[in-house]
Image (tube, rainbow, N blue to C red):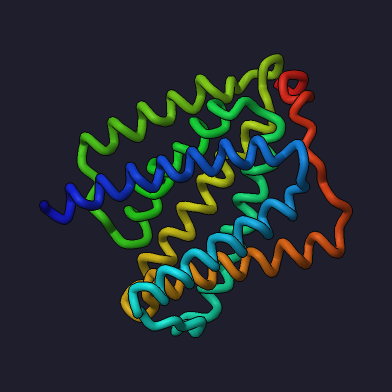
Length: 211
C-alpha cells in the first residue's frame, strides 16, 4: 500500500473518530460544562496515549525541542475546541461539523504561504467550491446570519494553524510528544478555567432560536 493511500485511510478513520466524539460531546452537553468536557477529553485522551506507548514499548517524553511552539499549539487546541464545543450546544450537529470541515481550505492556504507548497488548479477549484459551501451554510445576510456559525470556522482555523506547527516541529518532536503536550496541556487549562470562571452550561434547547 502506498504512503498516500495509507494516509487517506488514516485521515478517514480520524474523521470517523472526530464525528463520534462530536456526538458524545453533544450528549454530554446536557450534564457537564464546557470546561468539564475539555478536562475529561484531555485526561482520557492522554491516558489512552500513555497506555498505547507503554503497550508498544515506545519512549514516553514530555520534553520538547520547541517549547514555545508546543505551548502555542496547546493554547490553539484548547481555545479552538472550546469554541467548537460551545457551538455544538447552540447549533445542529451536522451544521457545526460541516462548518468545521472548512479546515482543508485553511490548511491549503497556510501551506502555500508558510511552506511554499504547490497549489494546482484542481486544489484551487476545490477551495472555491468549499468556500461557496460554507457561504450556503453560514448565510451571510443581516436577517439570517447566525453568529454562532463563526465558532466552528474559528476552530477550523486554529486547528489548521496547529497542524502547521506540528509539521514544522515534526523533525525533532515526535507525533507522540506533540499529542502528550496537547492532551495534558489542554486538561490543565480546562481545570484552571473550571476553577476560576463560572461553569458555562450548554442550552441545546436554544439552538434554533439563535439561527
